[in-house]
Amino acid sequence: MDSKSPATGRQDQPRRRAVSKRSLATSLSILDAAERLFAERGYDGASVRDIASAAGAQIASISFHHVNKETLFERVVERRASELSQLRLEALSARKQGDEQLTLEAVLSAFLRPYLEKAGAGDPQWLAYARLVAMVSADTRWHTISERCFDPTAGVFIAEIATLFPDADTTTIAVSFIFSVSAMLSLSTSRWRIEALAAASGNQPAMDRLADDLVRFCAAGMRATLER
Image (tube, rainbow, N blue to C red):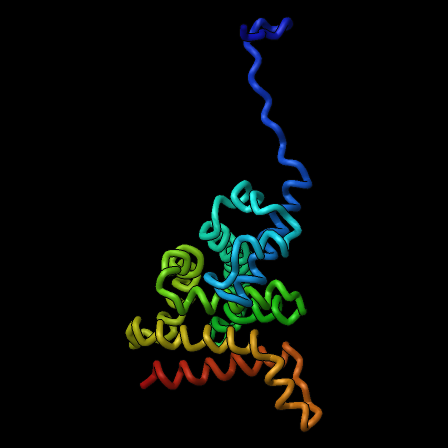
């Protein structure tokens, strides 16, 4: 028989159990472990069993918190994409609200620097994320993730570049933009190689300087292409 509240006479509603801190911590640990293993082994090479083991969780926890392997992969990509998009759009907005006229270098800086600053801070999870983004961008089976997580923000920046180069067609702008994104991902994941090559001269550039160089490099290549 259904119970009623003695004070109101209304039927009691079943209480929803709050998500515990332990449950949230387990979910986060799974996401972190999956991010690392997907980056190291690829989607097919990272098993659910290995992810659970790296997270210190039971295999059943994967399905409980994240449904299945494919959904887990999508959530791993999505969680940093949202933060990164916000940082990029805020940086672009700040540039547009400044006193100086918006330049190609300013647009590219607003897009490239937020990630480089995250990766340059030394967080291994953000470094792993760079490899994941490269993976998603290169594999057509993940095109829906790219379209949902990356394309809306990329579209905003491409539109800004199109305003600066009104005679350039959108395809050429998109190609140049992808070249710039690829350079950013390469810098993020191959800094160890740069440091190894620079070790002979004893000059290992900091990420801030590398970011400046990357913006100049991408802007010069894009401008040369779009002004043809």
